[in-house]
Length: 61
Image (cartoon, rainbow, N blue to C red; front, side):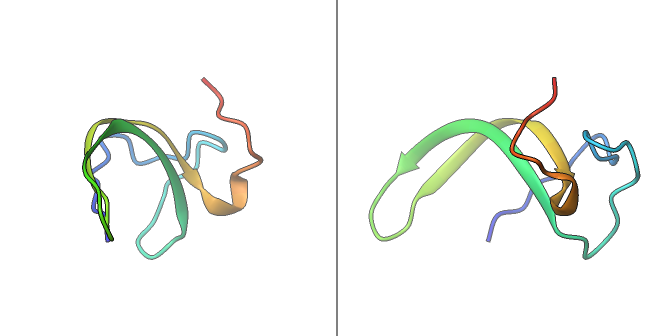
């Protein structure tokens, strides 16, 4: 499980608010710090977040 706190709570694709229990997609930058059966990831920032239903395989900037 990964937890992230977003400073902006609207979908980057449609602009509507993201709500509790909605499936979303997050694109984050960071580094794998440990590898084995599980990977440890240290993120430096969330680049993009949108509702999963809005995702069309393209990150809008």
